[in-house]
Amino acid sequence: MIKKQLKITSEVVIERAHRIGQHKHNKPRTIVLKLLNFQDKNKILNAVKHLKGTGLYVNEDFAPETTELRRKLWEEVKKLRSEGKYAILKYDKIFSRDFKKRRVSLLLKLFF
Image (cartoon, rainbow, N blue to C red; front, side, top):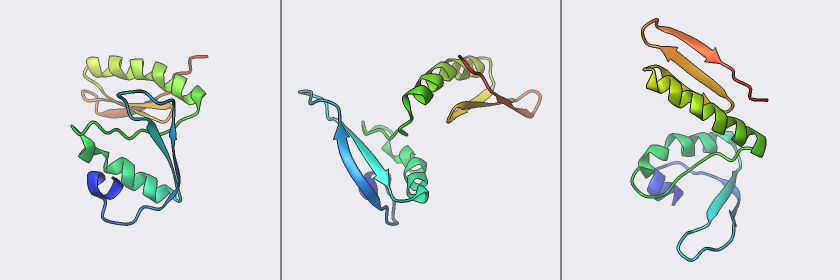
């Protein structure tokens, strides 16, 4: 799947792969990969655009605390985008750019 669907030509070394979750009649279970090096992870994440429309998804696996924080930060990203600003979420930080002022700002929002 990695080489064919993601159109990656170089070798990707998978250290370990396993499925998680319980069996469901009509849904395949999630597959978790452990890659040997960081460059392979970046190759896969950069090639995710080739999966559009296939029904396959690739996501990073974060700790539960980080996942919860990202869920809260995502609401802020959507708000900034609706205001016409460029905003992306990287790990646990929001990066935003106001197109009118042409400046880049880093927004740190902690919801504790």
